[in-house]
Image (cartoon, rainbow, N blue to C red):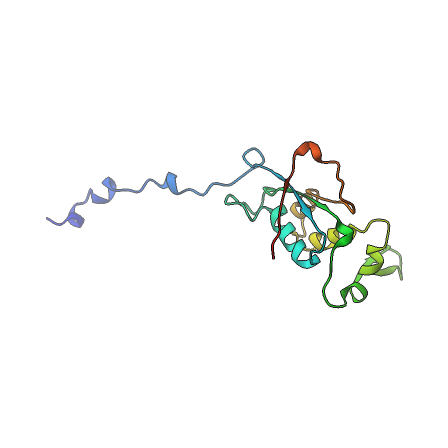
Length: 164
């Protein structure tokens, strides 16, 4: 008698589906690390895309799209970031005051020469994160500083080499 003719064959050899269940991370099961990235001499777009990936958590095997499972990133030397071609003079960043005719624009060079040159890195990374509540929460995991010093020594951040 063939095996498939046995009516109890499928009930005997069922696959345990519990072992194949996808595991989703949540705020209790995630593990967040701290990294330091040196932006000196790095191209802004390439640097920002890698930082956004790490903040989002896509480099981890337990990546869950709807959970903040990424790591915290500290960027130092943000004033020494590089842009290719003529983007320092040509790239414009727009904002609006909220009043009629209140659209203002600044070039990348003006932002880099301002009081807070780290805004250039912040704008680039924020544009690569989701545009929703999760994206706003993920953006709080980014810390950008113009110089080489940062106040997050207590978190014992690891140095992250971004090789392109």
